[in-house]
Each structure stands twice: as structure tokens, then as C-alpha cells.
Image 1 (tube, helix red, strand yellow):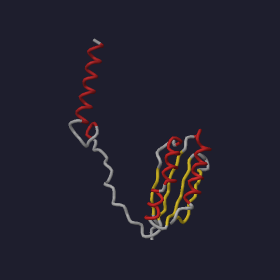
Image 2 (cartoon, rainbow, N blue to C red):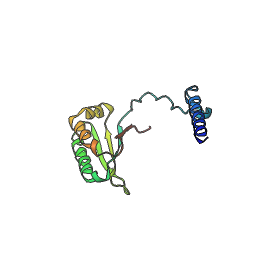
Image 3 (cartoon, rainbow, N blue to C red):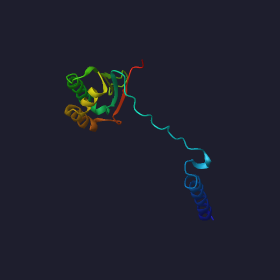
Image 4 (cartoon, rainbow, N blue to C red):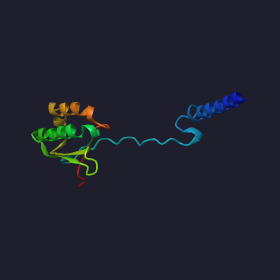
Length: 143
């Protein structure tokens, strides 16, 4: 008897899941409409300087070498053509969570920096130390 009840419950669960997901694409189980992200807007060509904010979350056991690597990256980046400023900041309550703030004269200067060997080397060395994906975002000052 228990086996029949278990089998019946299992079959009903599978049927509900199948009906909710397979037959109603674009909806969640029980007919709730799925949330879809709005289409991505076309990139905006910044009218002036480009502000780049990069969030770098280093695993706690890699805090010291990861921070040293970020400091070296900042020193190397300061020698790139077109950079206005670059700083690395540490979060006060979690010093292994860093922010790299860069200001570039224009998008072309930033793109040259992205193609530079020291930038590629930095990312390759940093990758095994990361606790979350590298998160870099470009901004511009709203006039």
C-alpha cells in the first residue's frame, strides 16, 4: 500500500512539473508568468572621459598576494597613455573585497589599455585568486 501511495505522489509531482514547465514555455510552474530581462540597450559612446569601476573579490586566503597584484596593476596602468587616474580601494569591513577605479580620457584609450599585455597578465594571475567573477563596468559622467 505504501509503495502505491508513494508511486502515485511521485507521478502526480512529475505531471505537475511537466505541465508547468514543458507545456507552458515562458511560464513557471502553476502558470506564473516568467520574468524576462529587458533587452540590453545599445552601448552609449561616452561624450568624454570613461570611468571604469571594477569589483575584485579575492578569496580570504589570497588577500595579501591578490592585493599586491592589484597594486602592481595600478602602478602599471598609471604608465598607460590616456589614463587620468587609477586607484585601488579596499572595503573597510572586508579587506579582500577591492574596487579598482580608473578614469580614461576616452573610450579608445581604455580599449588600448584592455589590449595591453600587462592587463592580460594581471587578469590571468588574478583569476585563481578570485572568489567571484571579475566584474568590470564602464560609466560616464552625466552632463
